[in-house]
Figure 1 (spheres, helix red, strand yellow):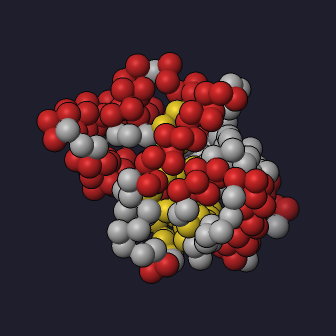
Figure 2: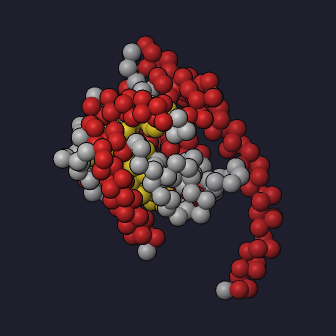
Length: 256
């Protein structure tokens, strides 16, 4: 085992040189593909006066092509736990930026993402997020965060599913970080079920540090929905803890 590891360590610099031009082309392609996808989605949704065309483009065209360009294979389990036509507050762990196209493609319904406020500094991305009905959350400003929760509640009550990464950032080592409780208030106010989702393997495809792509398989498990009936905002910490436990359990099964 040690000799094999030493051989791999010796080969690592050479493999990096081999992958560098491939990764460069992938970065260029992903950038241009995403730019074009955002523009087309914005135009389609503006003409239709609805985010649905843009979200359809993301699920059926943008995400599949982007994942194929990185030779990413998805193994999704638990889709049968989702009741068609029903809104959910979807909660997933966060390993890599590629989690976004992975979940767009893996989930059988359109979802509105919760985006951190820092991303609003990118003009095109800000317009796209707002046009698709997604919501920016500024955790550093309590009043702004409360307004964001109200917007999320409106989306859920209107029948949209909303997806949150409650860890607040991508995990450095793949281990689950403590879930923040704020956005869970929207699920409680809207009275919708929380849908725990575990993602394993995304960090190996595109790690948190650096920009590189590696082919591989990502496994996604959709857990049992967690009811919120009868719960109040004061119980959001308990709901967040229960959801984290559910996601952690699914991750343990994936890694077993």
